Length: 111
Image 1: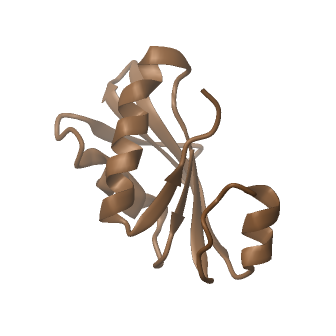
Image 2: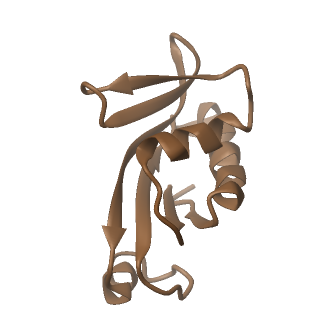
Image 3: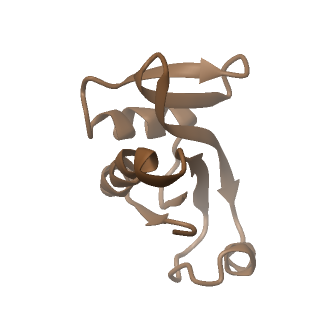
């Protein structure tokens, strides 16, 4: 999934917005900190926040995500991943809810 945030965010902001979906979840850092993983418990990741990048060109968004709605720049592009299949559904739901908290558009890729 990709979140396109209208205002500045950091990886931690995104993880905290995802936690609003279920207060029993926790966050752990991967790769010495730049990647955050929201987990149900120590062995069940729900969604991983890979990073945040500022995008100043709407043309770049249209090139990579041609189906994205028209937004104005700058945007903060957030890449996330969830487990495949039914295990990933809570992460998708959390991302959709977090997009409202973050003033973002959530784009779910694939099925």
